[in-house]
Length: 376
Image (cartoon, rainbow, N blue to C red; front, side, top):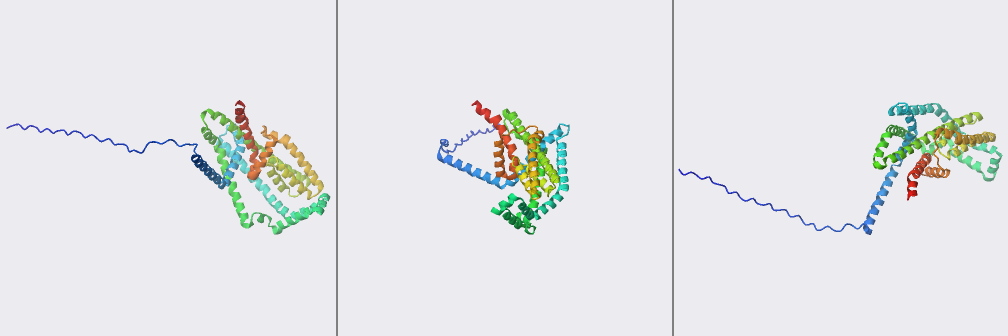
């Protein structure tokens, strides 16, 4: 038998893949001319729209931003006390708990002791406001001015119309519903400030540490030292201002008992609140105290005015330096301008915040801006 030859399969030649020709999208053009008016106008308009949007967003959230600023301010003010306890081998959380507990306890004790007589005296003050204004005529000078210009008569009619049927507070807040809204919003704002202050106080070192990491490493040390100095100055100012305001309130209470002035607790509270306002606070306090004392007798008004004036000098030259230890060293003109601008923009809170912020700005100018300009 003939051997069958194996059939060899011819290997078919491999077909070469056709290389995909790239699609022609045309050649690249020249880059955009950034100096072209259209380019400039487009991005300028886009930046303007973005800026307006951000400003409107800030305006819409102004109340929340104000609460955050107040909380940060209080946290900075309590931070030196927390650091004092930390130096006594107490942990940060433990020190915060002690300080916050002391503050809440003091506020609770103050409310329990001072609020009931304060409410009674404020109600009595509102009810007797027309009589107090009428008693101003007992002063010969004021009575002479009233006869020529009718100042006291006009004031008496205005006060009598305002406190008619005990509706002064209700009308001031826009009716009964307005009073309810004011009470609820005040309680919510106070609770929010308390919680935010607690969180900021606990996490202040970690927050600043994360913020410092955003700065380049070559400048991180200097920025952190400047920022810590600003926080320290704010803390010293807040703590000192609160302490001085409390002392001013106690002084007014003692003065009221010594001269048997009416509405002693209400006067002390007014002076305490006025004492928190730098520069202009005591002008408001001395005006209120003198007017209330004048309703009793001109002699009591003169004694109150002189005693308050002497206390202000003692506070400025003895009490304030001892409490703050290290002054903020702000020129008088800068203080006046800062308080006026802060009060105009943010009211009472702006007046309180403006002075330490001015001190922070001066620190940055002295350490950053001026040395750079002097070397150029």
